[in-house]
Length: 403
Image (cartoon, rainbow, N blue to C red):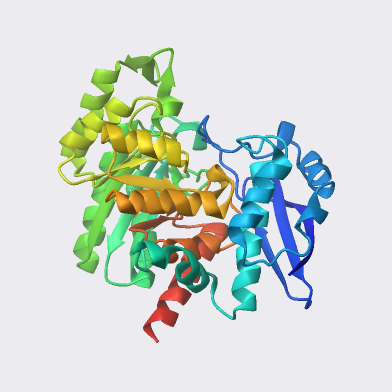
């Protein structure tokens, strides 16, 4: 039974404020969870903090926190419904999605501890197994070169991504990191000396999309030859961030929707992209569908278009917009809502990919969710302490599952 819930302000990896929740049971056991925060956000996701204020979020939750007292932490759906009732909006704009996310995940952690289960085992046994979802160890997917709003450089698209396929999460993560280092060397060979990293640890490129992808492609080819392992390459175009005044902006150049589709497909053909995230503006379900129809088996992934929301995903299913959906708990605001999106995707043959945010904490819960959700990938970065925390946790889970 929940005895009390305490909230506090903490810093995310961008140095901005987010929320940490501590839920204490009557036996003295407690669980702590914290919410990440995004930079590139969908207009349809939960509002992180009311008026951007962590203090206001904590103050408002303080007025309703006693309503949770006495509820069994295993009553996840009840807790998440009560979060909505306390907020009294559809997007957590009063309490803040950072509050609801932290409280929702902390409740699941406390229930798992009470049942003496790892978080991934608890979620799988109590929520996802019933839908025919199978546990799996996902491949780490990380950005090696960054652009867009994450970097403020010449590359308009947001991320160039890699994912090794070497048989274990540990080796996959290690090869991703080797590719990251190799890309740094290729930048130096191309005269880009002393370049820095963006907020997710990807290299902050001084070049445009084509040149940066060529650098990534060369780094991948070198590492494949060195290791003998397969490495996939992909992009997050962050189409909604490119979309300005009815067109897609690439510096001084603008592309129509038709031209954007052609450009994305050119990148796919030239660089063998196996992962294409948010190629179009988040309201262009038909544009996504056109790319999916030409993708020849590549994953076309919806992030901003869905915002981890069942109603949005239903629209995408009706339009056959994508064959994969990105999963971010803080977009939905609660674990229950997130599980409902995963279930809907599974029932319609759509892959799910659990993802970090640009503003991360050291909380490792997404590693557990990715395993319990049967995710194909976990998008968690390559370098940086808050990113590596997720990778290390995933490898611990993998070792536990093998033992």
